[in-house]
Image 1 (tube, rainbow over the protein chains, first blue to last red):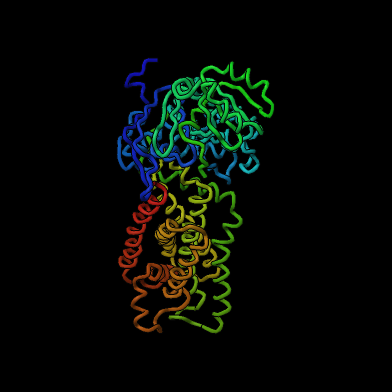
Image 2 (tube, rainbow over the protein chains, first blue to last red):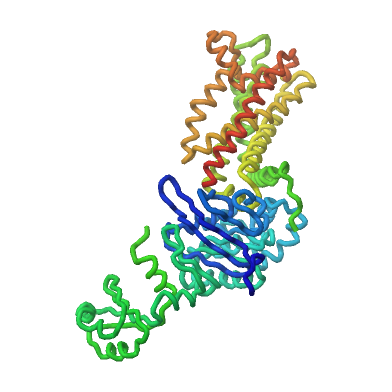
Length: 309
Length: 257
Protein backbone atom coordinates (compact mmCIF):
# COMPACT_ATOMS: atom_id res chain seq x y z
CA UNK A 1 0.00 0.00 0.00
CA UNK A 2 1.40 3.35 -0.98
CA UNK A 3 1.10 5.86 1.82
CA UNK A 4 -0.12 9.05 0.22
CA UNK A 5 -2.09 11.87 1.80
CA UNK A 6 -5.35 10.08 1.02
CA UNK A 7 -4.30 7.18 3.12
CA UNK A 8 -3.74 9.13 6.28
CA UNK A 9 -6.51 8.56 8.78
CA UNK A 10 -4.98 10.29 11.78
CA UNK A 11 -2.32 12.95 11.68
CA UNK A 12 -1.07 14.61 14.85
CA UNK A 13 1.66 17.24 15.02
CA UNK A 14 3.12 18.65 18.20
CA UNK A 15 0.13 17.62 20.28
CA UNK A 16 0.38 18.79 23.86
CA UNK A 17 -1.87 18.46 26.87
CA UNK A 18 -1.28 19.37 30.51
CA UNK A 19 -3.51 18.99 33.57
CA UNK A 20 -2.68 21.78 36.00
CA UNK A 21 1.11 21.79 35.83
CA UNK A 22 1.48 18.12 34.91
CA UNK A 23 2.20 17.53 31.22
CA UNK A 24 0.43 14.35 30.11
CA UNK A 25 1.01 14.50 26.36
CA UNK A 26 4.20 16.25 25.39
CA UNK A 27 4.62 16.96 21.70
CA UNK A 28 3.00 13.95 20.09
CA UNK A 29 3.67 13.41 16.36
CA UNK A 30 1.72 10.57 14.86
CA UNK A 31 0.45 9.27 11.51
CA UNK A 32 -1.96 6.40 11.19
CA UNK A 33 -2.67 5.00 7.74
CA UNK A 34 -5.83 3.54 6.32
CA UNK A 35 -6.35 -0.15 6.92
CA UNK A 36 -3.62 -0.57 9.49
CA UNK A 37 -3.79 -1.54 13.11
CA UNK A 38 -1.82 0.96 15.11
CA UNK A 39 -0.88 0.26 18.72
CA UNK A 40 -0.08 2.76 21.43
CA UNK A 41 1.98 0.93 23.95
CA UNK A 42 3.07 2.39 27.25
CA UNK A 43 3.05 2.02 31.02
CA UNK A 44 0.22 3.42 33.12
CA UNK A 45 0.21 7.20 33.00
CA UNK A 46 2.15 7.35 29.73
CA UNK A 47 -0.54 9.50 28.10
CA UNK A 48 -2.19 6.80 25.95
CA UNK A 49 -5.76 7.35 27.07
CA UNK A 50 -5.44 11.14 26.94
CA UNK A 51 -4.12 10.83 23.38
CA UNK A 52 -7.14 8.76 22.39
CA UNK A 53 -9.48 11.20 24.13
CA UNK A 54 -7.95 14.01 22.09
CA UNK A 55 -8.64 12.10 18.85
CA UNK A 56 -12.31 12.01 19.81
CA UNK A 57 -12.56 15.62 20.92
CA UNK A 58 -13.11 14.55 24.53
CA UNK A 59 -9.90 16.20 25.67
CA UNK A 60 -8.86 19.50 24.14
CA UNK A 61 -5.19 19.83 23.17
CA UNK A 62 -3.31 22.81 24.60
CA UNK A 63 -1.18 22.97 21.48
CA UNK A 64 -0.55 21.25 18.17
CA UNK A 65 -2.70 20.21 15.23
CA UNK A 66 -4.81 17.13 14.85
CA UNK A 67 -6.70 15.75 11.87
CA UNK A 68 -8.83 12.63 12.01
CA UNK A 69 -10.33 11.31 8.76
CA UNK A 70 -11.01 14.56 6.90
CA UNK A 71 -11.80 16.62 9.99
CA UNK A 72 -10.01 19.15 12.15
CA UNK A 73 -10.11 18.08 15.77
CA UNK A 74 -11.46 19.25 18.18
CA UNK A 75 -13.43 21.72 16.01
CA UNK A 76 -15.13 19.10 13.86
CA UNK A 77 -15.01 16.24 16.34
CA UNK A 78 -18.76 15.69 16.29
CA UNK A 79 -18.68 15.19 12.51
CA UNK A 80 -15.69 12.89 12.82
CA UNK A 81 -17.40 10.77 15.46
CA UNK A 82 -20.09 9.85 12.90
CA UNK A 83 -17.40 7.71 11.26
CA UNK A 84 -15.59 6.44 14.36
CA UNK A 85 -16.35 3.50 16.62
CA UNK A 86 -15.16 3.67 20.22
CA UNK A 87 -14.44 0.87 22.69
CA UNK A 88 -13.77 2.59 26.02
CA UNK A 89 -11.56 1.26 28.77
CA UNK A 90 -14.38 1.40 31.29
CA UNK A 91 -17.53 -0.57 30.63
CA UNK A 92 -20.40 1.82 29.93
CA UNK A 93 -23.07 -0.50 28.63
CA UNK A 94 -26.53 0.50 29.80
CA UNK A 95 -27.35 -1.84 32.72
CA UNK A 96 -31.07 -1.08 32.45
CA UNK A 97 -31.24 -2.49 28.93
CA UNK A 98 -30.96 -5.89 27.27
CA UNK A 99 -28.23 -6.69 24.75
CA UNK A 100 -30.41 -5.69 21.78
CA UNK A 101 -31.73 -2.59 23.51
CA UNK A 102 -28.17 -1.49 24.15
CA UNK A 103 -27.38 -1.70 20.43
CA UNK A 104 -30.62 -0.01 19.48
CA UNK A 105 -30.19 2.87 21.92
CA UNK A 106 -26.54 3.44 21.03
CA UNK A 107 -27.46 3.47 17.34
CA UNK A 108 -30.02 6.18 18.00
CA UNK A 109 -27.22 8.45 19.26
CA UNK A 110 -25.91 8.47 15.67
CA UNK A 111 -29.25 9.61 14.33
CA UNK A 112 -29.76 6.24 12.65
CA UNK A 113 -33.34 5.27 11.96
CA UNK A 114 -34.84 2.37 13.89
CA UNK A 115 -35.14 0.51 10.58
CA UNK A 116 -31.46 0.95 9.74
CA UNK A 117 -30.48 -0.13 13.25
CA UNK A 118 -32.73 -3.18 13.26
CA UNK A 119 -31.22 -4.26 9.95
CA UNK A 120 -27.74 -4.19 11.45
CA UNK A 121 -28.49 -5.86 14.76
CA UNK A 122 -28.49 -9.56 13.67
CA UNK A 123 -25.04 -9.21 12.08
CA UNK A 124 -23.71 -7.43 15.16
CA UNK A 125 -25.08 -10.12 17.48
CA UNK A 126 -23.40 -12.74 15.30
CA UNK A 127 -20.16 -10.79 15.38
CA UNK A 128 -20.32 -10.69 19.17
CA UNK A 129 -21.37 -14.39 19.36
CA UNK A 130 -24.36 -13.24 21.36
CA UNK A 131 -27.17 -14.48 19.07
CA UNK A 132 -28.60 -16.55 21.89
CA UNK A 133 -28.43 -13.69 24.37
CA UNK A 134 -30.25 -10.98 22.42
CA UNK A 135 -32.71 -10.35 25.23
CA UNK A 136 -30.33 -11.00 28.12
CA UNK A 137 -29.79 -8.31 30.75
CA UNK A 138 -26.30 -6.83 30.89
CA UNK A 139 -25.63 -7.99 34.46
CA UNK A 140 -26.10 -11.61 33.37
CA UNK A 141 -23.24 -11.38 30.85
CA UNK A 142 -19.65 -12.44 31.57
CA UNK A 143 -16.80 -9.95 31.26
CA UNK A 144 -15.89 -11.36 27.84
CA UNK A 145 -19.48 -11.11 26.58
CA UNK A 146 -19.70 -7.50 27.74
CA UNK A 147 -16.49 -6.65 25.91
CA UNK A 148 -17.76 -8.34 22.73
CA UNK A 149 -21.02 -6.44 23.02
CA UNK A 150 -19.11 -3.17 23.51
CA UNK A 151 -17.10 -3.98 20.40
CA UNK A 152 -20.25 -4.81 18.42
CA UNK A 153 -21.85 -1.61 19.71
CA UNK A 154 -18.89 0.37 18.36
CA UNK A 155 -19.73 -1.02 14.88
CA UNK A 156 -23.35 0.14 14.83
CA UNK A 157 -22.42 3.14 12.63
CA UNK A 158 -20.23 1.04 10.30
CA UNK A 159 -17.15 3.11 11.25
CA UNK A 160 -14.03 3.55 9.11
CA UNK A 161 -11.92 4.03 12.19
CA UNK A 162 -12.07 2.15 15.48
CA UNK A 163 -10.52 3.52 18.64
CA UNK A 164 -10.01 0.92 21.35
CA UNK A 165 -8.70 1.72 24.81
CA UNK A 166 -7.25 -1.45 26.34
CA UNK A 167 -9.76 -3.74 24.63
CA UNK A 168 -8.76 -6.90 26.47
CA UNK A 169 -7.76 -5.67 29.92
CA UNK A 170 -9.20 -7.88 32.63
CA UNK A 171 -10.22 -10.74 30.32
CA UNK A 172 -9.20 -14.37 30.67
CA UNK A 173 -7.09 -15.95 27.88
CA UNK A 174 -10.07 -17.52 26.12
CA UNK A 175 -12.05 -14.31 26.10
CA UNK A 176 -9.00 -12.42 24.89
CA UNK A 177 -8.47 -14.85 22.00
CA UNK A 178 -11.99 -14.21 20.73
CA UNK A 179 -11.52 -10.43 20.91
CA UNK A 180 -8.26 -10.79 18.96
CA UNK A 181 -10.02 -12.86 16.29
CA UNK A 182 -12.72 -10.24 15.97
CA UNK A 183 -10.21 -7.42 15.75
CA UNK A 184 -8.35 -9.27 12.98
CA UNK A 185 -11.64 -9.66 11.17
CA UNK A 186 -12.14 -5.88 11.36
CA UNK A 187 -8.61 -5.26 10.07
CA UNK A 188 -9.35 -7.59 7.15
CA UNK A 189 -12.45 -5.53 6.39
CA UNK A 190 -10.04 -2.65 5.70
CA UNK A 191 -11.05 -0.66 8.75
CA UNK A 192 -8.38 1.29 10.59
CA UNK A 193 -7.76 0.39 14.22
CA UNK A 194 -6.02 2.39 16.89
CA UNK A 195 -5.65 0.61 20.18
CA UNK A 196 -3.85 1.11 23.43
CA UNK A 197 -2.59 -1.81 25.39
CA UNK A 198 0.03 -2.81 27.88
CA UNK A 199 -0.02 -6.40 26.75
CA UNK A 200 3.03 -6.89 24.55
CA UNK A 201 1.78 -10.06 22.91
CA UNK A 202 -1.43 -8.28 22.00
CA UNK A 203 0.48 -5.48 20.30
CA UNK A 204 2.85 -7.93 18.65
CA UNK A 205 0.08 -10.11 17.25
CA UNK A 206 -2.38 -7.49 16.12
CA UNK A 207 -0.55 -4.33 15.25
CA UNK A 208 1.10 -3.43 11.96
CA UNK A 209 2.82 -0.56 13.68
CA UNK A 210 3.42 0.37 17.27
CA UNK A 211 4.39 3.53 19.06
CA UNK A 212 5.96 3.07 22.47
CA UNK A 213 4.95 5.97 24.70
CA UNK A 214 6.18 7.17 28.05
CA UNK A 215 5.80 10.46 29.89
CA UNK A 216 3.65 11.80 27.09
CA UNK A 217 6.27 11.22 24.38
CA UNK A 218 6.74 8.63 21.69
CA UNK A 219 10.03 6.88 22.36
CA UNK A 220 10.03 4.62 19.32
CA UNK A 221 7.78 3.80 16.41
CA UNK A 222 7.64 1.03 13.83
CA UNK A 223 6.47 -2.51 13.12
CA UNK A 224 7.06 -4.97 15.98
CA UNK A 225 9.91 -6.61 14.03
CA UNK A 226 11.48 -3.25 13.25
CA UNK A 227 11.34 -2.19 16.87
CA UNK A 228 12.96 -5.40 18.02
CA UNK A 229 15.59 -5.23 15.28
CA UNK A 230 16.57 -1.62 15.85
CA UNK A 231 16.32 -1.32 19.61
CA UNK A 232 17.60 -4.52 21.09
CA UNK A 233 20.00 -7.42 20.65
CA UNK A 234 18.27 -10.44 19.09
CA UNK A 235 19.10 -13.03 21.78
CA UNK A 236 18.30 -13.03 25.47
CA UNK A 237 19.54 -15.32 28.21
CA UNK A 238 17.84 -15.00 31.57
CA UNK A 239 19.88 -16.21 34.51
CA UNK A 240 19.00 -16.85 38.11
CA UNK A 241 20.09 -19.05 40.99
CA UNK A 242 22.41 -18.77 44.00
CA UNK A 243 25.56 -18.45 41.90
CA UNK A 244 24.27 -15.67 39.69
CA UNK A 245 26.02 -12.81 41.48
CA UNK A 246 29.35 -14.53 41.43
CA UNK A 247 28.97 -15.38 37.75
CA UNK A 248 28.17 -11.82 36.74
CA UNK A 249 31.22 -10.34 38.44
CA UNK A 250 33.63 -12.98 37.18
CA UNK A 251 32.44 -14.15 33.77
CA UNK A 252 29.77 -12.00 32.20
CA UNK A 253 32.18 -9.82 30.26
CA UNK A 254 33.67 -12.83 28.50
CA UNK A 255 30.54 -13.28 26.45
CA UNK A 256 29.96 -9.75 25.09
CA UNK A 257 26.54 -9.42 26.58
CA UNK A 258 24.78 -6.34 27.79
CA UNK A 259 23.51 -7.47 31.16
CA UNK A 260 20.69 -6.04 33.20
CA UNK A 261 20.01 -7.00 36.76
CA UNK A 262 16.38 -7.14 37.97
CA UNK A 263 16.05 -8.47 41.50
CA UNK A 264 17.43 -12.00 41.48
CA UNK A 265 17.47 -12.32 37.72
CA UNK A 266 20.11 -11.23 35.25
CA UNK A 267 19.10 -10.57 31.64
CA UNK A 268 21.92 -10.95 29.09
CA UNK A 269 21.17 -9.30 25.76
CA UNK A 270 23.49 -10.43 22.97
CA UNK A 271 24.01 -10.97 19.23
CA UNK A 272 25.16 -14.57 19.46
CA UNK A 273 24.26 -16.77 22.42
CA UNK A 274 25.76 -20.15 21.47
CA UNK A 275 28.95 -19.92 23.48
CA UNK A 276 27.23 -18.63 26.59
CA UNK A 277 24.54 -21.30 26.52
CA UNK A 278 27.13 -24.04 26.17
CA UNK A 279 29.10 -22.64 29.08
CA UNK A 280 26.04 -22.27 31.27
CA UNK A 281 24.81 -25.79 30.69
CA UNK A 282 27.54 -27.08 32.99
CA UNK A 283 27.37 -24.38 35.66
CA UNK A 284 26.18 -25.59 39.05
CA UNK A 285 23.98 -23.14 41.00
CA UNK A 286 22.69 -21.40 37.89
CA UNK A 287 19.43 -21.76 36.05
CA UNK A 288 18.96 -20.14 32.70
CA UNK A 289 16.44 -19.60 29.94
CA UNK A 290 17.40 -18.74 26.41
CA UNK A 291 14.88 -17.03 24.15
CA UNK A 292 14.64 -14.57 21.28
CA UNK A 293 14.25 -10.92 22.14
CA UNK A 294 10.66 -9.73 22.03
CA UNK A 295 8.71 -6.54 22.23
CA UNK A 296 8.66 -6.64 26.01
CA UNK A 297 12.45 -6.40 26.06
CA UNK A 298 12.27 -3.33 23.82
CA UNK A 299 9.53 -1.86 25.96
CA UNK A 300 11.40 -2.36 29.21
CA UNK A 301 14.61 -1.05 27.72
CA UNK A 302 12.91 2.13 26.57
CA UNK A 303 10.60 2.77 29.51
CA UNK A 304 12.70 1.33 32.32
CA UNK A 305 11.80 -1.27 34.89
CA UNK A 306 10.48 0.98 37.65
CA UNK A 307 7.01 0.33 38.97
CA UNK A 308 4.39 2.80 37.70
CA UNK A 309 1.55 2.60 40.18
CA UNK B 1 -25.79 5.15 5.87
CA UNK B 2 -25.86 8.10 8.24
CA UNK B 3 -29.00 10.10 7.76
CA UNK B 4 -28.87 13.84 8.36
CA UNK B 5 -28.99 14.38 12.07
CA UNK B 6 -30.36 17.82 12.82
CA UNK B 7 -28.77 19.65 15.72
CA UNK B 8 -32.23 20.69 16.87
CA UNK B 9 -33.29 17.06 17.27
CA UNK B 10 -30.22 15.62 18.90
CA UNK B 11 -31.74 15.86 22.39
CA UNK B 12 -34.37 13.36 21.33
CA UNK B 13 -32.40 10.06 21.54
CA UNK B 14 -31.18 11.06 25.02
CA UNK B 15 -34.72 11.79 26.13
CA UNK B 16 -35.93 8.56 24.52
CA UNK B 17 -33.25 6.54 26.29
CA UNK B 18 -34.48 7.83 29.63
CA UNK B 19 -38.10 7.12 28.68
CA UNK B 20 -37.13 3.53 27.89
CA UNK B 21 -35.38 3.05 31.22
CA UNK B 22 -38.28 4.70 33.05
CA UNK B 23 -40.80 2.38 31.38
CA UNK B 24 -38.92 -0.56 32.83
CA UNK B 25 -39.00 0.94 36.33
CA UNK B 26 -42.53 2.26 36.34
CA UNK B 27 -43.37 1.00 39.83
CA UNK B 28 -40.86 3.04 41.84
CA UNK B 29 -41.31 5.96 39.45
CA UNK B 30 -45.04 6.10 40.07
CA UNK B 31 -44.54 5.80 43.80
CA UNK B 32 -41.99 8.60 44.00
CA UNK B 33 -43.38 11.09 41.50
CA UNK B 34 -47.09 10.57 42.14
CA UNK B 35 -47.55 8.62 45.33
CA UNK B 36 -45.54 10.88 47.60
CA UNK B 37 -47.13 14.18 46.53
CA UNK B 38 -50.55 12.56 46.87
CA UNK B 39 -49.66 11.54 50.42
CA UNK B 40 -48.94 15.20 51.15
CA UNK B 41 -52.16 16.22 49.48
CA UNK B 42 -54.30 13.77 51.44
CA UNK B 43 -52.35 13.92 54.66
CA UNK B 44 -52.07 17.66 54.95
CA UNK B 45 -55.24 18.46 53.02
CA UNK B 46 -57.55 16.35 55.16
CA UNK B 47 -55.48 16.20 58.34
CA UNK B 48 -54.48 19.82 58.63
CA UNK B 49 -57.46 21.07 56.65
CA UNK B 50 -59.79 20.28 59.58
CA UNK B 51 -57.95 22.80 61.77
CA UNK B 52 -57.17 25.30 59.08
CA UNK B 53 -60.56 25.54 57.47
CA UNK B 54 -60.36 28.16 54.74
CA UNK B 55 -57.17 29.76 53.45
CA UNK B 56 -57.30 32.84 51.29
CA UNK B 57 -60.97 32.22 50.75
CA UNK B 58 -60.30 28.68 49.54
CA UNK B 59 -61.00 25.34 51.14
CA UNK B 60 -57.56 24.13 52.37
CA UNK B 61 -57.45 21.05 50.13
CA UNK B 62 -58.22 23.26 47.13
CA UNK B 63 -55.53 25.72 48.19
CA UNK B 64 -53.02 22.95 48.78
CA UNK B 65 -53.63 21.01 45.53
CA UNK B 66 -52.17 23.75 43.33
CA UNK B 67 -49.16 24.11 45.64
CA UNK B 68 -48.50 20.38 45.62
CA UNK B 69 -48.61 20.26 41.82
CA UNK B 70 -45.84 22.89 41.70
CA UNK B 71 -43.73 21.55 44.57
CA UNK B 72 -43.92 18.08 43.10
CA UNK B 73 -42.81 19.35 39.70
CA UNK B 74 -39.80 20.97 41.39
CA UNK B 75 -38.94 17.91 43.48
CA UNK B 76 -39.33 15.44 40.63
CA UNK B 77 -37.13 17.44 38.27
CA UNK B 78 -34.52 18.19 40.93
CA UNK B 79 -34.27 14.55 41.90
CA UNK B 80 -33.92 13.53 38.26
CA UNK B 81 -31.28 16.19 37.55
CA UNK B 82 -29.24 15.16 40.59
CA UNK B 83 -29.46 11.52 41.73
CA UNK B 84 -30.43 10.01 38.38
CA UNK B 85 -28.26 12.27 36.26
CA UNK B 86 -25.28 11.71 38.57
CA UNK B 87 -25.72 7.96 38.11
CA UNK B 88 -25.58 8.41 34.36
CA UNK B 89 -22.64 10.80 34.57
CA UNK B 90 -20.37 9.28 37.21
CA UNK B 91 -21.52 5.72 37.95
CA UNK B 92 -22.69 4.16 34.69
CA UNK B 93 -20.69 6.49 32.39
CA UNK B 94 -23.71 6.77 30.13
CA UNK B 95 -22.82 10.33 29.16
CA UNK B 96 -19.24 9.41 28.31
CA UNK B 97 -20.67 6.74 26.02
CA UNK B 98 -22.89 9.34 24.39
CA UNK B 99 -19.87 11.60 23.88
CA UNK B 100 -18.23 8.83 21.82
CA UNK B 101 -21.05 9.34 19.32
CA UNK B 102 -21.93 12.51 17.41
CA UNK B 103 -23.77 13.84 20.49
CA UNK B 104 -22.35 16.84 22.36
CA UNK B 105 -22.47 17.97 25.98
CA UNK B 106 -25.13 20.54 24.99
CA UNK B 107 -27.28 17.77 23.50
CA UNK B 108 -26.94 15.75 26.70
CA UNK B 109 -27.83 18.65 29.00
CA UNK B 110 -30.80 19.70 26.87
CA UNK B 111 -32.00 16.10 26.58
CA UNK B 112 -31.71 15.60 30.34
CA UNK B 113 -33.44 18.93 31.10
CA UNK B 114 -36.34 18.13 28.77
CA UNK B 115 -36.52 14.70 30.36
CA UNK B 116 -36.69 16.24 33.85
CA UNK B 117 -39.48 18.49 32.57
CA UNK B 118 -41.27 15.45 31.16
CA UNK B 119 -41.22 13.73 34.53
CA UNK B 120 -42.60 16.88 36.15
CA UNK B 121 -45.30 16.94 33.51
CA UNK B 122 -46.14 13.34 34.28
CA UNK B 123 -46.29 13.99 38.00
CA UNK B 124 -48.41 17.12 37.56
CA UNK B 125 -50.82 15.31 35.24
CA UNK B 126 -51.39 12.56 37.80
CA UNK B 127 -51.92 14.99 40.68
CA UNK B 128 -54.20 17.17 38.59
CA UNK B 129 -56.24 14.11 37.70
CA UNK B 130 -56.61 13.05 41.33
CA UNK B 131 -57.37 16.62 42.40
CA UNK B 132 -60.15 16.90 39.83
CA UNK B 133 -61.59 13.56 40.98
CA UNK B 134 -61.64 15.04 44.48
CA UNK B 135 -63.56 17.98 43.06
CA UNK B 136 -61.00 20.62 43.99
CA UNK B 137 -60.22 21.75 40.45
CA UNK B 138 -62.30 24.44 38.83
CA UNK B 139 -62.38 25.52 35.25
CA UNK B 140 -61.11 24.43 31.84
CA UNK B 141 -58.00 26.60 32.12
CA UNK B 142 -56.63 24.08 34.62
CA UNK B 143 -55.07 22.17 31.72
CA UNK B 144 -52.70 25.12 31.26
CA UNK B 145 -51.10 24.00 34.52
CA UNK B 146 -49.43 21.21 32.56
CA UNK B 147 -47.17 23.35 30.35
CA UNK B 148 -46.27 25.42 33.41
CA UNK B 149 -45.27 22.24 35.28
CA UNK B 150 -43.21 21.17 32.27
CA UNK B 151 -41.36 24.50 32.11
CA UNK B 152 -40.81 24.46 35.84
CA UNK B 153 -39.39 20.95 35.50
CA UNK B 154 -37.00 21.92 32.69
CA UNK B 155 -35.90 24.90 34.77
CA UNK B 156 -35.25 22.95 37.99
CA UNK B 157 -33.85 20.02 36.05
CA UNK B 158 -31.23 22.37 34.58
CA UNK B 159 -30.48 23.94 37.96
CA UNK B 160 -30.04 20.43 39.38
CA UNK B 161 -27.61 19.63 36.54
CA UNK B 162 -25.60 22.67 37.59
CA UNK B 163 -25.36 21.16 41.09
CA UNK B 164 -24.54 17.73 39.65
CA UNK B 165 -21.63 19.16 37.68
CA UNK B 166 -19.91 19.83 41.03
CA UNK B 167 -20.94 16.62 42.80
CA UNK B 168 -18.39 14.04 43.93
CA UNK B 169 -20.96 11.78 45.59
CA UNK B 170 -24.71 11.49 46.15
CA UNK B 171 -24.35 13.05 49.62
CA UNK B 172 -23.58 16.39 48.02
CA UNK B 173 -27.21 16.73 46.89
CA UNK B 174 -28.47 16.97 50.45
CA UNK B 175 -26.93 20.43 50.69
CA UNK B 176 -28.96 21.64 47.76
CA UNK B 177 -32.17 19.99 48.89
CA UNK B 178 -31.85 21.21 52.47
CA UNK B 179 -30.42 24.65 51.83
CA UNK B 180 -32.23 25.58 48.61
CA UNK B 181 -35.19 23.43 47.61
CA UNK B 182 -36.87 22.93 51.02
CA UNK B 183 -36.65 26.59 52.14
CA UNK B 184 -37.89 27.63 48.72
CA UNK B 185 -40.90 25.32 48.96
CA UNK B 186 -41.70 26.74 52.41
CA UNK B 187 -41.41 30.33 51.15
CA UNK B 188 -43.29 29.99 47.89
CA UNK B 189 -46.86 29.73 49.12
CA UNK B 190 -47.15 25.99 48.56
CA UNK B 191 -48.50 25.03 51.99
CA UNK B 192 -49.58 28.43 53.32
CA UNK B 193 -50.00 31.92 51.92
CA UNK B 194 -47.22 34.40 52.53
CA UNK B 195 -49.53 37.26 53.58
CA UNK B 196 -48.87 36.90 57.30
CA UNK B 197 -45.09 36.72 56.77
CA UNK B 198 -42.88 39.75 57.53
CA UNK B 199 -42.56 42.12 54.59
CA UNK B 200 -38.87 41.28 54.11
CA UNK B 201 -39.59 37.61 53.58
CA UNK B 202 -42.53 38.41 51.31
CA UNK B 203 -40.31 40.59 49.17
CA UNK B 204 -37.47 38.11 48.95
CA UNK B 205 -39.88 35.36 47.96
CA UNK B 206 -40.43 37.37 44.79
CA UNK B 207 -37.10 36.13 43.43
CA UNK B 208 -38.11 32.48 43.81
CA UNK B 209 -39.26 30.86 40.57
CA UNK B 210 -41.47 28.44 42.49
CA UNK B 211 -43.39 31.34 44.08
CA UNK B 212 -44.19 32.62 40.61
CA UNK B 213 -45.22 29.16 39.44
CA UNK B 214 -47.65 28.93 42.35
CA UNK B 215 -49.01 32.38 41.46
CA UNK B 216 -49.72 31.03 37.98
CA UNK B 217 -51.00 27.59 38.86
CA UNK B 218 -53.30 28.45 41.77
CA UNK B 219 -55.60 30.75 39.78
CA UNK B 220 -55.56 28.33 36.84
CA UNK B 221 -56.62 25.42 39.05
CA UNK B 222 -59.18 27.30 41.11
CA UNK B 223 -60.75 29.39 38.39
CA UNK B 224 -59.77 32.67 40.03
CA UNK B 225 -58.55 35.64 37.98
CA UNK B 226 -54.96 35.44 36.87
CA UNK B 227 -52.74 38.40 37.79
CA UNK B 228 -49.62 39.37 35.82
CA UNK B 229 -49.14 36.00 34.07
CA UNK B 230 -46.46 37.49 31.84
CA UNK B 231 -44.35 38.46 34.83
CA UNK B 232 -44.69 35.05 36.48
CA UNK B 233 -43.93 33.17 33.29
CA UNK B 234 -41.11 35.61 32.58
CA UNK B 235 -39.38 34.85 35.89
CA UNK B 236 -39.51 31.10 35.25
CA UNK B 237 -38.22 31.59 31.70
CA UNK B 238 -35.46 33.89 32.95
CA UNK B 239 -34.21 31.19 35.34
CA UNK B 240 -34.44 28.68 32.53
CA UNK B 241 -32.49 30.93 30.18
CA UNK B 242 -29.66 31.20 32.69
CA UNK B 243 -29.73 27.63 33.99
CA UNK B 244 -29.48 25.80 30.67
CA UNK B 245 -26.33 27.48 29.29
CA UNK B 246 -24.78 27.44 32.76
CA UNK B 247 -25.43 23.71 33.08
CA UNK B 248 -23.96 23.12 29.60
CA UNK B 249 -20.80 25.06 30.47
CA UNK B 250 -20.30 23.35 33.82
CA UNK B 251 -21.06 19.81 32.66
CA UNK B 252 -18.69 20.37 29.74
CA UNK B 253 -16.00 21.44 32.20
CA UNK B 254 -16.64 18.22 34.10
CA UNK B 255 -16.64 15.83 31.12
CA UNK B 256 -14.25 17.37 28.60
CA UNK B 257 -10.65 17.73 29.74
